[in-house]
Amino acid sequence: MKGWNRKKIVFDLSNRTHKIEEIPEKWLKDFIGGRGLNSRTLYDLIKADTDPLGPDNYLLVGTGPVTGTLAPSSARSTFTALSPLVLLGEGKYPCFGDSNAGGNFGPAIKYAGYDQLVIGGRADSPVYLWIDDGYVEIKSAENLWGKDTYETQDMIKRNWEMRIFR
Image 1 (cartoon, one colour):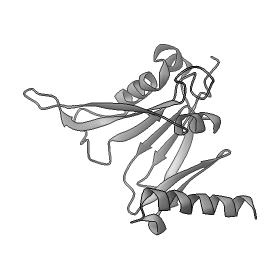
Image 2 (image 1 turned 45 degrees about the vertical axis):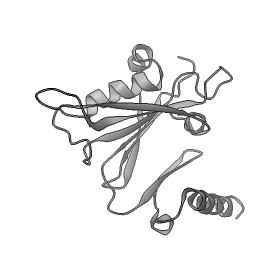
Image 3 (image 1 turned 90 degrees about the vertical axis):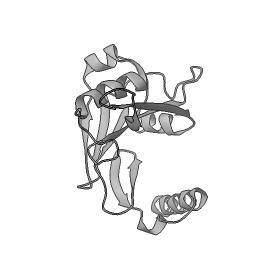
């Protein structure tokens, strides 16, 4: 089972809590990659009547066994949720929403020791997730609200640097 950390962080934004859980080895073998792992996890988490825009939906971020290695296209992460788009048909069933992206995010999750982030609930005020060397926290983002992405990133980096150089 090389290539896996076998751990995920489950965030509950409503209660501002998190827990670290083991990922079943069978899932890692049977549902390879971030998309497979996210698909299996989402299947277990949501119910048929889940509101895609409600707090009972989940956002999953998954990585695969080669994420963060030197293999081609290995800097990928997959994002999965129940989509607010609907499938055509009598019941107008919500559909599976899935996308992936490259960059540093997937490898950063893997290097932090995790294969998956499971984010559920709804925070009562703006928050962001902080994961650093085994330390995990749901932090207030009130001071970041209304800032653009560049300002937000700069402010978070400054806070991180102040913590490191104390």
